[in-house]
Amino acid sequence: MTRCLVVQHLEPEGPYRIAESLEERGVAVQMCRVYAGDEVPADVSGIDGLVVMGGPMSAANGEGFPTRAAELKLIAEALVWRVPMLGICLGAQLLAVAAGGRVYRGAPGPEIGWMPVQLTGEAQSDRLLAELASPLVALHWHGDTFDLPPGSRHLASSDLYPNQAFRAGDSAWGLQFHLEVDRRALAAFMETFGEEACAQGTAPEAIWEPAPSCLAALEPISRSVFGRFAGLVCERSVNRDNMSCL
Image 1 (cartoon, rainbow, N blue to C red):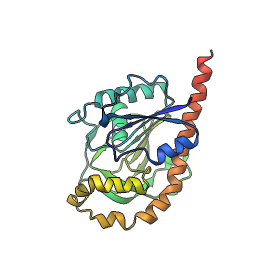
Image 2: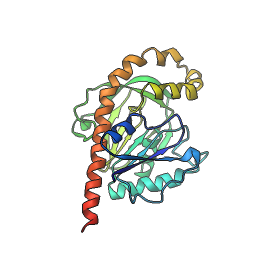
Image 3: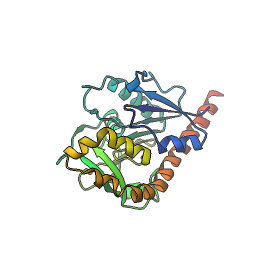
Image 4: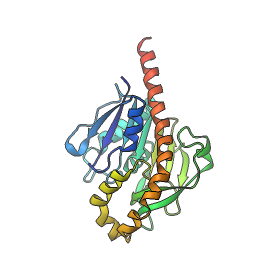
């Protein structure tokens, strides 16, 4: 069976449309809910893909983040074994650290709300992002940023945070923004993090009012990106099965 492990740090920050795309391709989604006490696997054996979701902690240190070291080890192993990997927000920052980059507080401050993302020329030949229209509008909800890891490919930027997406090696992607959100996700984000948005000067109506049109425009983009990722996970499963027969 083809399996993809999803590391989830907080209940509201689930895989949403990522899980839908994986399941549509027949991939079994194996949840690792670290907020509920699940242990991070020691290695990538038995999985064909890895997804690491977002969360309010910082990838820069272990303060309030007891599974950080275990997650970094798992991501590093996925890089070595070329297991298809997708990091969202905090997950992207962890990928940056595991690949040799640095994570730190962004300036001039957090980026929260619906904002455009500009794809780079490198993205036009990328296996996940090729042929997407640029710019695209995505949901942002982050205060940290990162330096690109050595040898990585820069795939997207925004006005406030120049490093919005990258690829490490040929099979690991980090997305600082949220393509996975649907209306359920947005409601969960607002309920959990709404006060944070207000404290940073982003009024709830600034997120809710454009949401219907933004989510509608985002759906085919997310289906394309995550569908391609699911395809890579399935390819990995076939290759793993063939290798096991040697």
